[in-house]
Length: 203
Figure 1 (tube, one colour):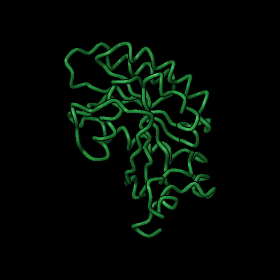
Figure 2 (cartoon, one colour):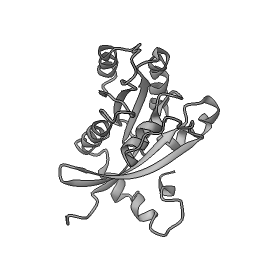
Figure 3 (tube, helix red, strand yellow):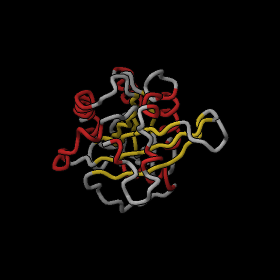
Figure 4 (cartoon, helix red, strand yellow):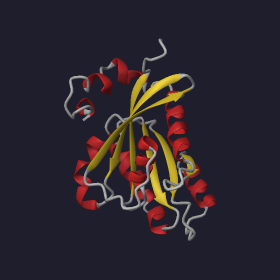
């Protein structure tokens, strides 16, 4: 494979309650920016970023989902074909941690890949008033066989690592991603013709 070629394109979801910082994590990862006035996501936001993992270039199509109930009708198409998902809670808000079970139930209901890789991210560790300890997060992640990291979209801590470890685990899981490229699910190709629908082929 020549140096400039992309090994595969992976659909990655970011889910969790409204206000936990999903969009801020995505913005920090893709654009290295932080906006304290970040507005709530309406429906779904979508960004693409290329990542190099173990000398492989991987294109990520990252879907940032709205946490509010009124936007939940889009759910099935969010999950379809995704080999990886990032579940986010706010370490300074215990309620967002308790709601993770509901998000996992939804994931189990709609995910089309049974061995989908899950990364649990405890966001906002820059906040002083932690209501969820690192140990609690780690226990929950182990119980549900998830990767785990604490992060701060504000200070950048843990953000890059969260995405890199998720992608690395996906690539190490036989059968989870290779079939996508062979089956024509190549987001890079579908977006070549211009226009805004670079991810139509995955819906």
